[in-house]
Length: 607
Image (cartoon, rainbow, N blue to C red; front, side, top):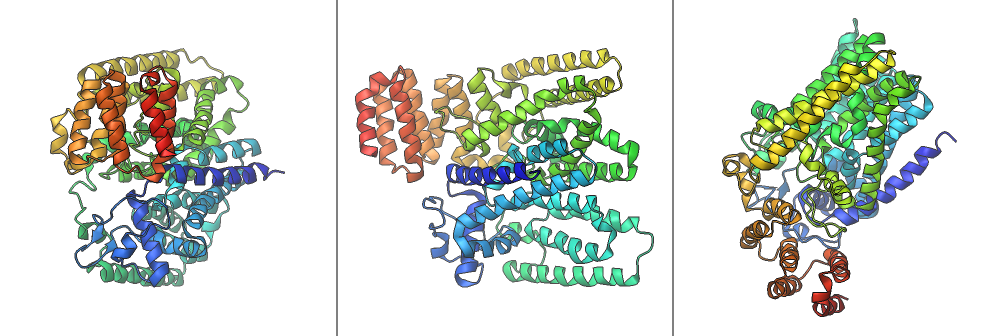
């Protein structure tokens, strides 16, 4: 009976993953390279992508993206520059059941990770109900749900982190054999999957190695042999593919090694606060219950100082390490997916905090909003899984969006919550910093309120700071709306950043065009659509946006012209149902009567 919540959750999660994968996948991004590499390995036993394999579309009926810009030495070789650990891991599943089996494996691994977190929390003394709720919340949050719906290395980060927490809870690190024969190979294999996993796991390996006062020489010999052999194979493989044994040569060989791929400037301008607070990728934003993890550290330090210290090092190091990446926000992928490996440990700290608070019911006043928002996120995701994907301008609600649950909430509640959440970009903005500091003050004040109420003391000062921080966020939001130009289309400073290489990518302009359309700034939206049209005249989303704008402006001639262009552009089959849904909604709206005959005819043609 105690396992029923996890069995039910696993079944629902598997259903959701397939639903989201079908709704979101458009044939591009990293997934296309991983899937084609896996297919090549199964089909002819190598990773070399022939022209036929690059065009391979059977794993997804519609895959309109032409590949080639992320291939190593593309004139003579066609190897993907992405790390190949995930390719080797998923190959057996693909051989058994194609793309369906790989999606199933990715989703199931995350469900197993959720169960391992539950077992770890119970072993660590957390009550059953708290363990169930926190474990399920850790799985059903946008960061993990998003990482489970596409095939990227981060799909494995959450279960890896859960396995480390489980090993810690069950004292497996006490065994030198476990450390050398299980955990050390796991570190290297995870690094083969992606380099950013090595430091995260290495911290725990070094910590437990350091805690042991006396180890036999044979243990160190075993460490040397295992790591030496595995690293030799790894470097040999890299040398075979790229002509250079260094792991980072994959991106360099494809000409994608930005000077700021890993830089302190990125950390201090955006990543340090962005990882926690950014409206697109922030942990506190998408996993709101995590705001009490500092209290969990406080309570843990009173009983287990060593554990508290290593978790402080782990969280701090990951914030600095991941925040220094040029792509810290994981843009072009689900929000915050790079931080997936931290979620199990934040869940543990939150569980400790809530365990301490269970006897103090009035402290739940400050926790309930986070639980309500988390529940609402699950509803949003299940209803509109396209919200998980970045810069996806058209969704099933017929309202353009910017890859944010906050946009969805705004559409439902007529409150633009995005204005109140910091948005970190490549350019340093003082108002972003001030807004983020106000958020940190709010989080700190809420935690202090909880602590004071827990200790049966008054929290008047903390409540005052909560009010002041909310006022600061509101003032900063109003100032931001009036002073900041559109970050991509209107601000020339963007063109001096490493992002300038993206300016020939139509979706970079589609995002602000969508925002202008939402605000009914139709002339501004049209200017941006014109830019997109020059780059990609047959972009379906842009043509649809043209149609919607002209329809709202009452310009029937241009509206019908772009409606015809949409049809002439050969709408991808994956977009047909979406387009039909939009036309039906327009037909039912007040504007629809004016275009009734034209739209009705288009619907008949599409059917």
